[in-house]
Image 1 (cartoon, rainbow, N blue to C red):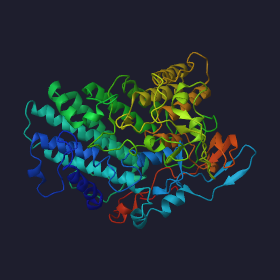
Image 2 (image 1 turned 60 degrees about the vertical axis):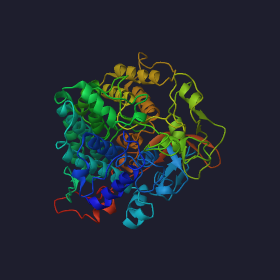
Image 3 (image 1 turned 30 degrees about the vertical axis):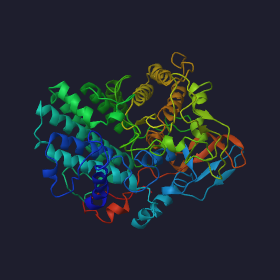
Image 4 (image 1 turned 90 degrees about the vertical axis):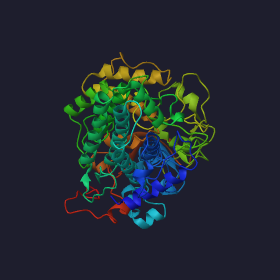
Length: 559
């Protein structure tokens, strides 16, 4: 990797931030200075560096993009490509990247858009377009390799630190922290890009690009290394809790965020390992057909063995009440803002004024009478769009206050919770899908009911009602769409269900709501997205760091 391009840009931001942040939150040194070993040689120093490695290098907006965190734009692309939001603003292609190639209205009128996701991605994947703010492939790569590189630096220093108390426990807690986040970074790269780089040494570099499957395997390696340390390398619970409590900013230790026990963290790891399988395989569900075939894809179909692996992992995954890794805005010294640090924040407003617009395709997944709708959305204004992003819906800031009902968006400081890794809901819905796919339909439906109860939906249970496999999968799809929105998963779901692929290859999305620019609501629209399934490597990387002869393709050869 070109370390100068990707690491120095963000690390310089850390040095600046260290002059204004509180010591126990985001106050860190600069690991790219030649005197890094002399600068970071104490327990407090390595902890501060470990905090900044994640929350600044990984999640801070380091290159002037839409919003101000990793959870505003890279997450935003997932929600755009998953068609849960649309946009009219031109920032970083958000208004065009998710326009489908064509759609067919209820009266069988075929409407071509003359816009191509593939063309948009490829035309703008140049260093010049990165400079102009139009290269969508740049941002996720930028932050995730900065996160990975910063964790490498921490790992290179931790064994030289003199810790108080149980030194082995404290060092292993920091190592587990870095292994977890390296696993997260590699998962993000391998789930989005056709190929990537494996770099595990501080200041290291590589020009051998490896196929995405190898990147996911490396993610699994580091997630398992974290789990192994948590199982065998922690002998002092109090020292472990003290260090982890310092690594996680206090404003993120609220709600579902907190100081995880080692057992909770291991369950978080199992959920992420299951996600790595699930989102990187096909499980087509096209027009109600669970046996649909995608004839041209960059990945393979989930097998029975895959489903059983997922089931084993999520059976031991995040439970209700477990702490997970979350982010929140803070009044000072935070890494995301209440008004622009998340997709939810950029969608929360009257639809004619919000950056992101709620999709009619998102809203159609709620069941009649769902309290989440009445508590969170209104229809007082209509946003009209010449493509597919017209909508009647807006997110109410902070919701209407219905007790026990999930809130989809808030611009109050500290109120909205961003899920960084897995969650109880995601784990439960993977349990649901794996069981349904393996023939345990009613068991799967019970998990869907549990999530709806947990989020305060207030709708009738579907378990015990004799639903078929197809009907059960329909319930699963609907609930994943609405329960896991704004968490960076929507595109992965649409891709694995086959919706984002060209209709000529067996893909497409059917039975959709679409509001035309004339405010006519169509309810049985066919959409041909034809999106690139895994993105090309950013030009900023591959042009400055040309691929070796042994490399995998740096452009997706299927498009």
